[in-house]
Length: 251
Image 1 (cartoon, rainbow, N blue to C red):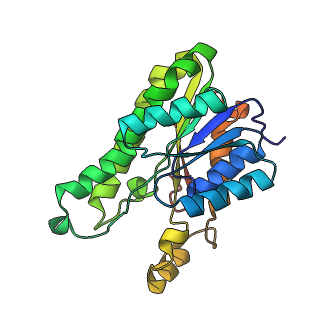
Image 2 (cartoon, rainbow, N blue to C red; image 1 turned 45 degrees about the vertical axis):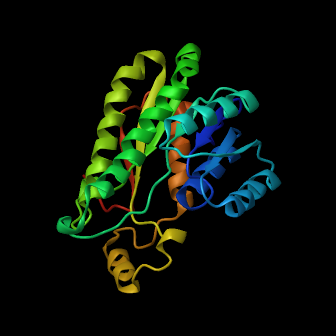
């Protein structure tokens, strides 16, 4: 049985390209109305949304900073007015992710990670929560990372914020379960997207050689994992983190 989301409304932040795009497309294919969010590149966002609507998707393209309290509330209000109350929330927007020794990090690097991976899901959840509670149905799916489970040197700002995001997921899952709302996270491995176009080939080759499944993951793999958590079939699954990385974290 394929998962069906007819009658539901999804908001996916940072969904003009990369993993966010395929997450939004997956939810749309299952029948959800989908709000695509972007901040900077209107041309890319418009192309993505045109692709979605050309395939029969229904939704909205909304601009806003997912780490700004004012923008978050405005976006949620706009989506709710146009499409209906958001009952599937996927905080996916991300900043640049510099890798460097801790001596080279400034606190602003850490703060940027906290803003996107803890503050943004916190603000989005609060903005969407009342209608979910009223309906006694909701899905919140955070996009975390395998790096918290595998550890990773020269990446302390990103890894620590992702750990905090997983903690937020678990705590919210316990708090919101009595209201019919599940809270889970999908933790992708290194899945090449546009942001990885200039990564060193030797680093890509080394990572690929370690993947037990013997292939790169794709954005579609991540989108399908999010779709499962959004579905009715996952209604008794909450507080979990699903690593989508071909067996890199088998424990």
